[in-house]
Image (tube, rainbow, N blue to C red):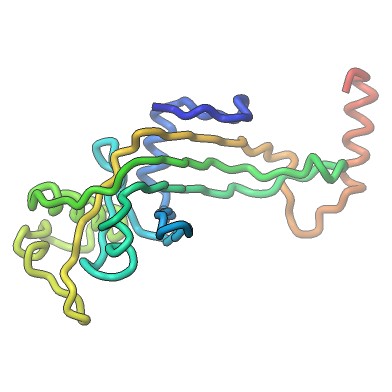
Length: 195
């Protein structure tokens, strides 16, 4: 299921690490195609049973798009800091990112929808509610604008995961200047002239 990545040395293939990242990250960006224009929106989500679940109103631009084109791209990324280098072109960011493609499905099974929404509550407000979410709540809930809540799902048909691990020694902090790193680079070159 992994898509080819141009910078193969940055491919992350550790399934446990990827699962942990997807379960903990806070925001997913859902990309849809509105005729010929991209439409990307940030969403709360949950990654469960190898699928992405999110929810929203049963009307609006997102639903209008999905009635004609269910193709979707989900992107999730976390930035772990900027790493400096005396050579400006080698300044880089530590990150992990996931790009997943698939079709958006409307979850019609009430058990699956309730389980997905319960997982979302467990993720974003753990231990806040003292009783599990009821199916009736999912079935009957209407927003203040009168729309019902839909649970949507994307089971990825392809997924690409990239990461650039953090080198803590090169992590930028306020007040760090290039001269500090140039002396370190000179010392490293003197010790190992192949650099």
